[in-house]
Image 1 (cartoon, rainbow, N blue to C red):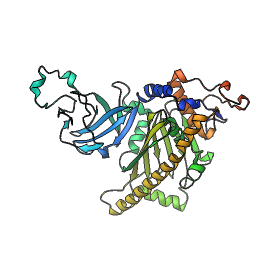
Image 2 (cartoon, rainbow, N blue to C red; image 1 turned 135 degrees about the vertical axis):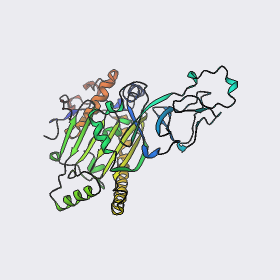
Image 3 (cartoon, helix red, strand yellow; image 1 turned 135 degrees about the horizontal axis):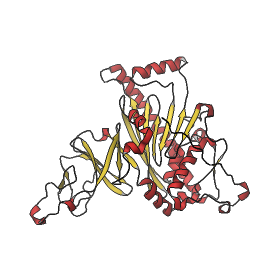
Amino acid sequence: MPFINKTKLRHLLRPDQYTSETQYEDEMKRLLLPAWHLVATTHDLPNPGDYLTFELLRQPVLLRNMGGELRAFLNVCAHRHSRLMKDARGSSERLRCQYHGWEYNAEGRTGRIPNAQCFRPFDRENARLQQFRVATCGQLVFVALTPNGSALEEYLGPLYAGWRESFDAPFRFAGSWEGEFDCNWKVAVENALEDYHVPLVHPKSFRTYAEEEQCSHVLTDRYTTYTRAIKNGDTWFGRAANWLIRWMGGTRTNGTYEHQIIHPHLMLAAADIVRTATIVDALSPTTCRFRMYCFTLRGERNNPAAQLVGWLLRVFAVALGKRVFREDASIYAEIQRGLAASPFRGVIGTREERVFAFQQFVSQGCPRSERPPADSDFEDPSALLGSPPLPPSPMPA
């Protein structure tokens, strides 16, 4: 059957785990800090000297194209602690501190230092920038804040090859958007893992959720996948769509849609003409940032007709993506307000079983707060619901 669980599931996280400062700090340390973080696309840094600055888990980060190679540093000068760069993006010939002009090379070592004789004897090792790991998957750029840990390919595991293909030619960057919201980061993630909310939250875009027979789930401790098989290849519209996709250089799937999450906060959505990569950044116990990168089929550069169709697909995909983004944003604060006042345990339906898998990941990753809600925690114990454990699901080949 399409859904793995056949009965309702227990809500593993208590409402206070979406508001607690202690829970937030535990998640930052145990779940988010060890992760790889999607921060940009190669489109953002095409030329040597191009750079981006941003905050990542309360750390100021500088990502720079250093002679064709991407490098990431703590955006703090080793001299007297100023931020190296202040602009969100830009381009410069040299990596030079805005305060006193100390310059650094691609390894983070000091280069030119104004009036350098003032610093004799000079300790170059202790005047070196703190560097972070950088890796790419297709056109996506990731940063890891920890000096040790799994490589990106290992972190994405069996999904790595599919992600690399999804965000490489013939797909090209179409646009990106983000927003900061008054909700815990887990609220935004959980919303993305189920379609049960679609009829009310997305009445003008998706409108309704798919029938169970069209859907399937893969549930593992590291990631989950939702697949919706539309199977429209036997209709005239489906045949025409498949022809168009092949003509644009894509691979036909008869309308299959797939959504994946790599726990804790990295998501992919893939359809025939569009791919999106999403990450949810935790900003505080009750605020988060949701960022989305969109890629579309754009056609061969030497085919003007395909380029025109690709442009139209890009406009359509970006407009739809932003509409869905706004629709989801309309409910986040309402969920957070409810969590702050809720006396209920909560319950998860089989259509929402990917939420259960995510909550299980959070609970197991933060063992000090993994106690599931007990009957005594709530007002009406007689009405509370239980659930069976999450069954195993095989890893895809």
